[in-house]
Length: 362
Image 1 (cartoon, rainbow, N blue to C red):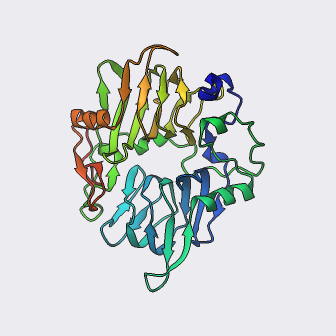
Image 2 (image 1 turned 90 degrees about the vertical axis):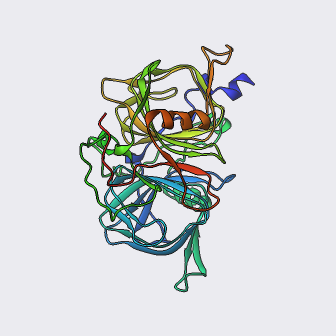
Image 3 (image 1 turned 60 degrees about the vertical axis):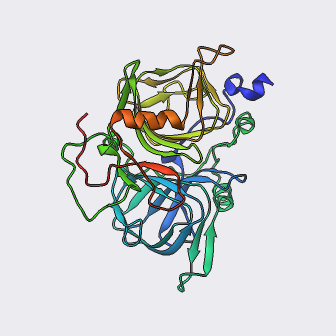
């Protein structure tokens, strides 16, 4: 029972991160001009995580998010020209689109790459704006990965224990930000230029303008709170992790993408994981320690899908539990205003740091 619950006992299994720079781009037949790097896909929940690329000039017309979606812009410029999601997204923008949102148009002003978590399928509409011509689902992502020989990140602890398949054998296709200082995506910039025409709602957030929260008891770990859902408990964060996170269980799953520095991680390589590596913690995963390797700031995105339980070692009493309620308190303590989603019935609280707002000096 213990070895099934704690993959620490089998660090050579499939558990671990995936370097998105090594995965090929796979074209999507549903959308000419769009391709993906598949990372994870669930047959149980229909959720899937991918890096999306849109070629400059690509225009996607008429589609509906059947599940919510969150995204982190890595490079390029993307515009939602019309409707309640109208806005222009550039590198460092984090976005959230609620389930059932209908998008009239999406335009790639430049070559675009972004990390995306789809909580359900996407339906593409016909010219009449009502009929469905195709659907992108987690099953499509699974099939595309299998066809190209790409191993998806496991969804459960049991899958983490399985033998790792042969790695993708084709040529690597790095992200556009590979080899750059991607920390700048989320680090505060002095005088972010105001542009009233870009975003007037909380669904697109300039992460540079969100202040870091630093707990006096953990001065080496800082957080930017981007979204807290009072319905699901999901929280979306940017984390600057320059210290050591003590022993903990992920009572709910979590996923991360390294933007800067290197992270030392159970079952990972001795020199850690660097920028462009994405990894997923299945519910129940345990870490005795997670820490920065080297001197560069370790900064990563994080979606936390449930509470994290901290202790002082295996079998010791619980000393703290971190959940959406604490992240909501952290946002308030850092001076980050959380406002309601503009979509009726969506229980998300979103950081009010609209694109074009003045950055906070940190």
